[in-house]
Length: 349
Image 1 (cartoon, rainbow, N blue to C red):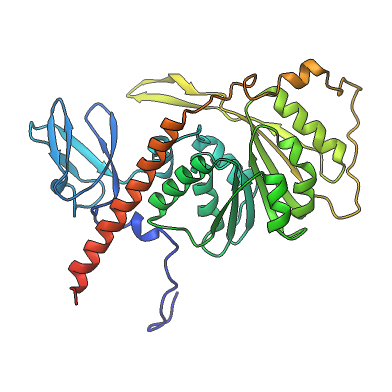
Image 2 (cartoon, rainbow, N blue to C red; image 1 turned 135 degrees about the vertical axis):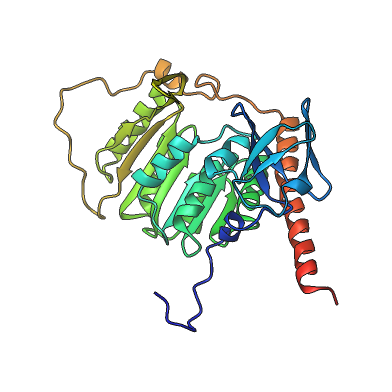
């Protein structure tokens, strides 16, 4: 407990956006009587329109989370700030996002801790970056690498929308991970490496170079063939522990009185996770005792790992520009609303 008169530590970046009354520029989640959800950004003079009437934003601005509001035709909505999982699934995107169930596994199983020095590759739309930034905190660091500038712009907009501005622990670099990471990070200086990319096996040497002894490398891949090739590359390198692979599946349950049963739908396969840890310099990984099996890859196997073969969808330039515009406009609206609130609270010169 702090002594009287001792100033409290500054709030973590973005924490003030999770507390207090709802303000212009914030995203809020409206849930109707049937459980349908809509996420909107509050603006002065704005309104949420449906075929059942409209709800003025003024009836939401200034109220506490958990308030029930009524629209012009008497329909009610429950008002809450969206959770991280809600935000990720509703934010503008160019690439497919890492689902919350996988992001949670990555943060936990890779042991992403406050103050950690983390690098990631394959920023996509920024969903995983947000979870990693929350985990490392203001005193940690996250250096993200992305090959496509359009994806970097979308991710930057989504991260700044979620945290209310640029995060002090985040840096993003354009280029190939295996080329750039060894230029920007000192050998053995990184605590954790997180890769969400098509061919993580191409990065084995770069990861081994920058990762500290005992550090964790975790990869997110879409297919069994990618999982297999990455695992074999890690084994062949010899500077890592035995790789471990898994997937997670989430099944909700219907809860109504005694009618308790599994939902008909579930979030099943989204991707595989593969992890290994860096051994001390000069140490050689233990060879697991197992029956001999085929580990050589034929040309047919290698052809199965092309972007088209593993189902990577090409995103049109038009869609990317639109997503980047949507992500950045949300940041601009929030910044304008914050500036207006500051003028109201402190007056103008």
